[in-house]
Length: 368
Ligand SMILES: Cc1cc2nc3c(=O)[nH]c(=O)nc-3n(C[C@H](O)[C@H](O)[C@H](O)COP(=O)(O)O)c2cc1C
Image (cartoon, rainbow, N blue to C red; front, side, top):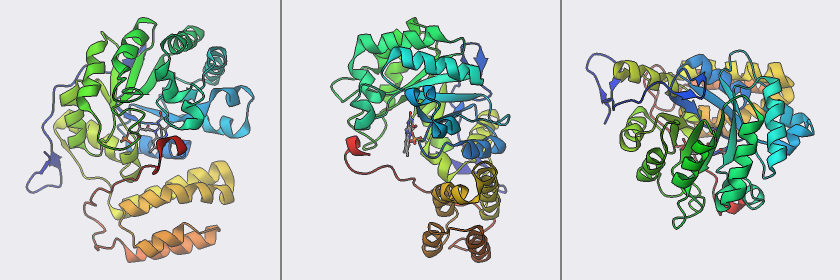
């Protein structure tokens, strides 16, 4: 679908018809391209990185345990920290008890969040088996009651992220989206797979379309397998969704939001960052981590993110492996110097780097 125009590095992709600007209730989003929550990755330092690069309409935290918020658990409070650069900003909460979820939402409003997202898609047994996450798709009345309780508790928009249904025989997302709209939910994000599918197979665009068609006015956010501008074009064209959220692809290409916003405005987009630009971005991210967590924990958190950066940068496998065991700032600096000197395996340090596939959890869904 994409073509590189002669004489420039810009790629053209035909534009579908876009819906109007996206609003969550009274909250206008600066673009229709949103960062999907990725537990362990969509931390404040990463959100600041993608915001700096531009084009992000909204970024959401990893899923946060509502009960742990209320006990003021230290790690949980860290997960909801934000920064003036990180706006508008959503916190995603999970839980199965309406009053706990409502109290958590009230507390988040006191902290100044712009919008609250309820997780109704997490497939992991620990969460779904306890009636939260995707487990909420199995029980209509208690799920609607929970959503209503949270909506009524706060003045900020409340959104819901869910899957198509529990399995292929119970595709309940259109029903839930319609009911959520009636009780005041401001938007619904839909990952176009069932809980049973986990991350297998591909996203069902007709399934997402059915959700778009089920509601009257609230924005529907299409999600799943968008790795490029061409994928987003297909998602918008075939589902009619108002917005698109991107998870895994942002880890390998944090420029994707900027590319999408540029493409929507002009029909073309510039390549993602070069090897050297990605290297600088990595160091920015490390500096945010160090600033907040200090060197030791900052390094541990950084190693996880660096894995995808270094893969995207086509760094030699052995060096990538070594990065995962760096323990001191000195070791990391020495390794970064070596990585900088060597450049990517194909020697192309100033040109376009090809996309990389970001792996998903393996094994039975329930045990991730
Ligand atoms: C490692 C990982 C962590 C995730 N964590 C969350 C989460 O905390 N909350 C959530 O709603 N979805 C979570 N998801 C699902 C993503 O938000 C998204 O729906 C899914 O990855 C499909 O979008 P993508 O193909 O753009 O990645 C996670 C996915 C992955 C791979």
